[in-house]
Length: 502
Image (cartoon, rainbow, N blue to C red; front, side, top):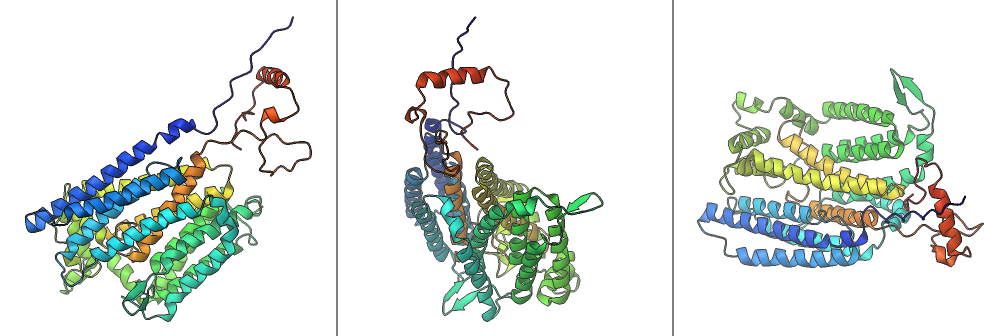
């Protein structure tokens, strides 16, 4: 007796239907409007607190930021329609809050105006983010530029060595009235190089036989070569430039990406041990780094000695003064921190004037941005380069946020890095907007509905990009339906044969 079975309904391509993903453009526009409105409201509140009236340029500032947000929304919907709707509003909101805090500090330090320049750099950073989306239709093209990226990163990292130090660290290039921090650009180039290198050598780094020390599987010495090379380079940067933050970021980025590529916890163990060893050696030999470690161990030591409160002590006082709900925008005293209150310690101003609740909200915004980047990495499970690149970019934001917030709260020693999108610094804000642009591009590729599964002719290369529909094959449609019906009666395996994703 013959039974007729209906062919199973084909699964929808991608994680969600294309129409549902496209409709999320409305959510992005709504979130952008909320970000612009929040920034404008904070700017007005600051004016009332400091001058008793709204700033005279409040409406022009809102119109300028709103126009930028609208243009960004339209271009993202045009060139990355499936991108995560949170990846653009979050940086815009963080950047806007940073502009408010910098302008608030400018009003009590008349001789050091930084907000106008920061506004220009922010606009240039957003423009660069959008230009990157337009000029880069696919992230795979970056894999072919891995070697030039590595060379450019090394040149940028070494360039500040030939310039005089600023505040004890050689991380700046200054010429006339222009200053540049090249290490900010180097971290993105290194992420591209690491992603391409690890994706290409993933097999060699994973399937190796190593030793076990107390139950921990360590890679063999031949495979430990790359991580030792990176450790030596980061140590050299720390010694020559006295930049603890860049060294930790550089080395931590490589170790995390190496672990993601190989899934071997031995890399993490080796990386942590080398980080501690390098920081201990340099902290002992380098006076600039040693002073920061001493301040971290005894933040109130200068008060006991009669020299007054140092920067870290003033930062802790600012957090304590803010309490749970904060003093209100424009009503704090974080200006007492000194010269770095707009850069390294801008989070102290946020903690004092917004309180623990506002500070928690800011950190949750960073956590949400990082989680969306890691989500894109997970969805790109069939693309090793894309997965590693999205992970690396998200880790850059994560490490910066952790190192800065940990430094100003006394959790770890200060490093001199800039809080992404929030702190003063043209190089930093432009680089972080470039990271946001790359994450938008990667998210668009990850969430884009997959094309129908390719049907290859006998002998056709497995990596061919040509996609042929079932109607283009010589097999009749009735035969295909019958074959589907027979397949539906077979025992199911762990892999879905109709899943269009690899």
